[in-house]
Image 1 (tube, rainbow, N blue to C red):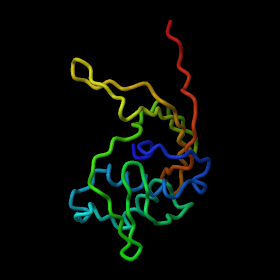
Image 2: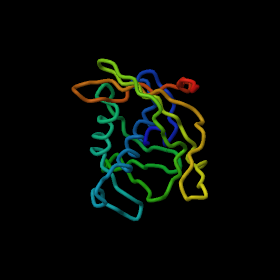
Image 3: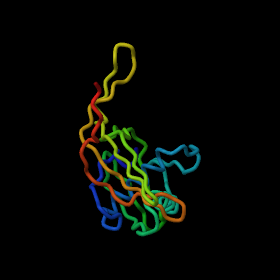
Image 4: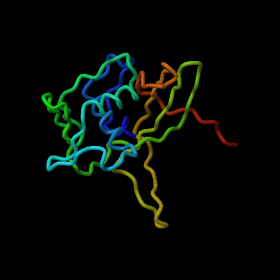
Length: 171
């Protein structure tokens, strides 16, 4: 979810990715995780998230081939302001409708790689059926997310545009 939430630029190699987007994904990943509400200090400016927490999440998502470079992120919907003196990100407490929500439609595994095909569903196009259930929109696009293994962990190595996976015709 944090990866497609902001509709990041695609990249063939994580070392060539937009650092600001990787930091933003890391912060969103922290916010979307099952963290204890008291994990981060809350101020009038929002949550105060130390760069160490962002770095831990960054490494979990993107591995160690690239080191995070901290700075203010002018992100989707809200800005995450970074104070280089204190090493703290200020994250406003506000609701944001994601650009996309993910729907994993295919997973291919090999020895040291997992390739996940994700349908990107418009975050504001969901509808409610008469019975109250949510109805997903048709995908706007598909992404191929390549996860590579390093030290027994999987990390995001590439995000690429792709076509919808082929489905077998029903007779």
